[in-house]
Length: 361
Image (cartoon, rainbow, N blue to C red):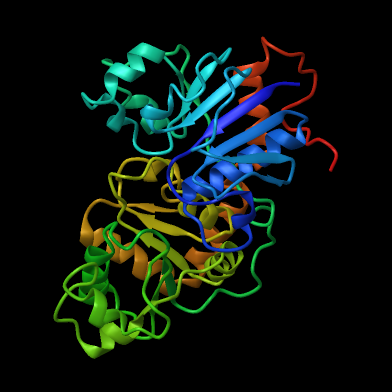
């Protein structure tokens, strides 16, 4: 099979961290994709900011400070253009665009894109639509959505609606403040027993007064005690704990952010059957079927109205809950690896299996 090398300079991690501590979307995606490619028989090496050589789940992890191979069949740089030259002479070079593609047209980055002309692997149709004409283009463009873990997909409908519990599961700097303002002004007064559960990776110490640390920053100033008591900021959670919290939520609320290039949390919530109310920002309209598995609303009043409806109307919640379970299951990481294999390796090695056929464990 093929020799595949990834390089990622985002955080300090290796494959073992997936089950040891909370990780961001980039690190999680790299680990899961690499593991599934290894399961398909490929020789997979990931260079990251890890401490030293590690072998885990069939993947070789090496520090970026080490010496990369001179060549490989497929080299994938994870978003950062300064990594494009890490492997000098790969047979095929790609860049996995895990942050907004607009960043690649920056004058300090664009020359590297033209020098190395990597194949862009995009994660959303929106990213393909805004791909700059100033960048080298691969036709047809490869749009490959992130996979979802098996324990997120395929759930049965809940027997009873959850209590009026909304969830926010993104970086708190991504419009949490404005969401809490809408919550305080237009949602909580109409659903006084509702709570907004905030799950994010942060560095607050356990037991810290969140409002003391965040008020005036990612949380608004001057909120009443009732509002403060209704907004629960949780410690950074392991992924399975986050999934449990999502599954027990009535709706996901998110105003979006320009930094979203896929929004894994939104895809996971929908796969779990959680109806959502999103603003029409970047990729979010792709993560929900408007009017069927949630709502996309730009106007803050309409956003609040839809949130209140999902928190209080059991019949509406039931329809959208079951529709999300039926239509929003996404793809598995095994299928993701199969699609990647078919798109980038099928003219280099014989591939006679379906992208849907997971290899034996």
